Amino acid sequence: MINVGVVGCGSIARKRHATEYLANLDVNILGFNDHYNERADYMTKEFGGKVYDSVDEMFADPSIDAVSICAANAFHADLTIKALNSGKHVLCEKPMAITLKDCEDMVAAAHKNNKQLMIGHNQRLSLAHIKAKQILDSGELGRVISFSTTFGHQGPEMWGIDKSADTWFFKKSSAAFGSMADLGIHKIDLLIYLISGHVTKVYADLTTLDKKFTDGTMIEVDDNSVSILTFDNGTIGTVTTSWTYYGEESNATILYCEKGIIRLYANPTYSLEIIYSDNTKVHYELDKIQTNVDDIQTSSGVIDMFIDGVVRDEKTVLDGAIALESMKVVFACLKSSEEGRPIIM
Image (cartoon, rainbow, N blue to C red; front, side, top):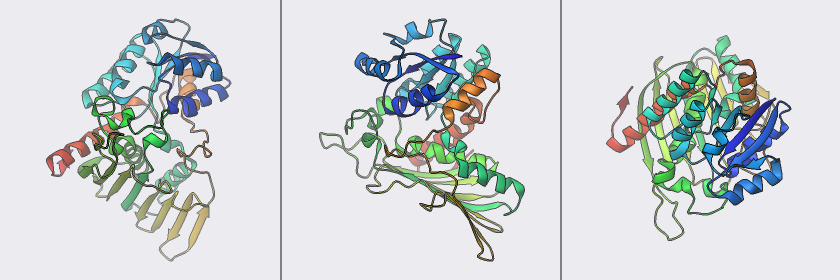
């Protein structure tokens, strides 16, 4: 039995981490910590365990084996490193951290303490993405020539626990960056996984178009972005992110290959479609994409993989060292937008 604690008691902790820990028969939830004690108290009433008044108290508890870090982005690195140095395995929410050095220090701390560090890049675990990876690796469609991928929804204030336009997601001091890192990290990590290559050049434009705080001023981070990624094998494509899709959420990826096209989560019925070069079509009804819509909350698989990795003492496809490569692309995109030029990696 793996005893776990959760730091940060917002929506991601309640709807994903705690819910999936509770469903895992190898897990015992020992407690929660949050800056607002009433949130942690609420979580204990729903999921069990106790309130830890501080992270130091939680990390010092020898009965806790592993922790989830679900706090704001700016605190990911410090909390993760402290937990690892306290002998805990760590599952940290994405984006991994707010500087590249922080990300590297997290990986180094996991290695030094011989503990698991996983980052919650759940899109690698979606059934259609796993199937697409198998198809691409088989060579059936040849190499990926180009791609387009989009992740957009109405914004984190619709998902956050307070349902407020003054959410920490919109503030540089707590979030550091906006839709590109919040949503784009998922798609960047997915493309690296599917294409099995390395990004060598990025050209990005991050902008704030519509989101405002409750006082009417524009938010401090990007609410939309478009990035062009070039891989070492020549594959090129776009990653689009948005917090201003005020209708249906979009979470689709299209891969244009030498012998056909793969469409992922672009059809409401079929999560994977193949259109061959002779226009023959094959449809797979595998699963539904993870979504922020409350009535479509399926298991992400992240918690189960984390616990399995801890039990087996084996690295996973969500290992922090793997996530580090995706974060390097995110930071390159941020630099590209700031400097208005392509960045060679």
